[in-house]
Length: 119
Image 1 (cartoon, rainbow, N blue to C red):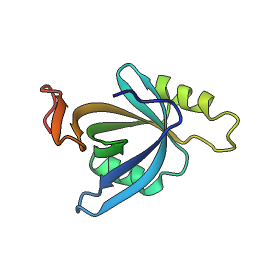
Image 2 (cartoon, rainbow, N blue to C red; image 1 turned 120 degrees about the horizontal axis):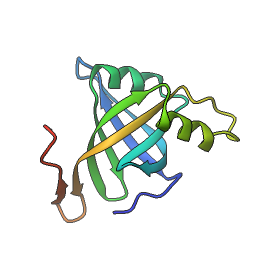
Image 3 (spheres, rainbow, N blue to C red; image 1 turned 180 degrees about the horizontal axis):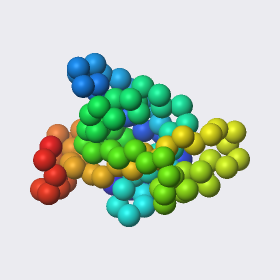
C-alpha cells in the first residue's frame, strides 16, 4: 500500500453521540509515519475528531483505521501551509493520523495491525 500525494481519500468520523460524518479529503503526504491532511474546510470533521479521535479511511480497496491528532501549529501545520500556498485555501489545522490497522477489502484480509494501539 503506497499513499500518494494529492490523492482523494474517503474519511469517516463520528461525534461523541455516534453521529457519523464522511468527507472526501486530499492527502498531503506521509511524514514521520503519519498521514498528513490540511484542514481548510473540515468544520464538522474537526469537531468530531476533537470529541472522538478515531477515524476510518477508505483508500483504493483498503479500509484503514487511524487515530487523529489536530495541530494548529508546528511541523505538520507548516507542511500543510507550504503545500497549500498556491491553492487559495487557508489552512486552519493540520490533521496528523497514525495507523492502527489496514484491511484489504478486495481479499477480506487484515494486512496490518499495530498492537501498540487500543482499537
